[in-house]
Image (tube, rainbow, N blue to C red):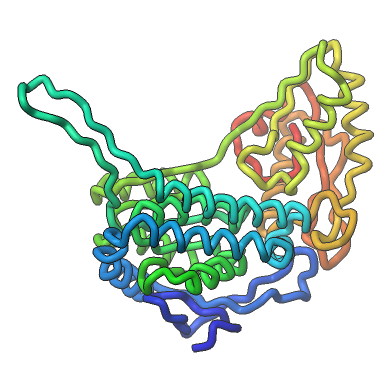
Length: 388
């Protein structure tokens, strides 16, 4: 099939069509369909793992120069196309254009960094307690690696997982988040043209319950790297332990922002606003819990509200937008439920959410205050532009 719409899976160096495809919709404009993307099933995972398994012996012994050259070429193209790819990222995920371009640049830098690491692979020799015996430690690839990535950083997080896996001689099957297939597909297309042999890198798009589950359970997959929710991550960890797979998990975080009486007010307000609200709060490093000591509390809240009023919420691709839309309608409803739960627990929504235009899935910026009222805010990782 053609590598154009509907955008296919990449298996064994070939673009593969499927019986089903799903639209990728722009959250800034629900009438704008970014593209149609193929939806795989367990049989496609089987084919991708088989291709990766077949490619592994040659790739793992291909030599560090060949791997360096391929990763460096990938990094160079990503950087050269940062504006185009950044606009695509903003269009499908909701980051602002500037944030999207910045993320794409980071992805390119990651590939170039690990290209350099290919040439710096080092071992270690250590003495043994047994006379005449030496101990040598070397790094070896482990085989086929399944990568499951989230929607909030749709090109940087795949890059963080793909680049080191390939640099050390592993073969990859990538399952991107189904909400943001466009950035992953664009990255796969760049990798496909880099000169990496068929089967070394494979892309299987589709629902997490189908593709992710098949990857985790597949006997031909030696390791899983997952970034996503705590609940899903725990299930993956259990399955990997039961099946003897290596597993790497990056799950949700809860990041309190503490403002003391002697804080620089202007700096504290600016850092708090950027941490909580920019990227629509849709990042695991965002601060969603705000702790302010009594002496500075009144003037800090007043200043923070004034700063929030200046934040322009709107179309991610529009000039001057500070905060784009929420990634999906389902995410918006979840975010709004957090506000209602916090209010029910005694919090006061002092700066209420904004729904923006009809065609925009938008939360806006929300601050819930009230001592230790919104206890929900202390325990749950919220992907929202919400401070409690």
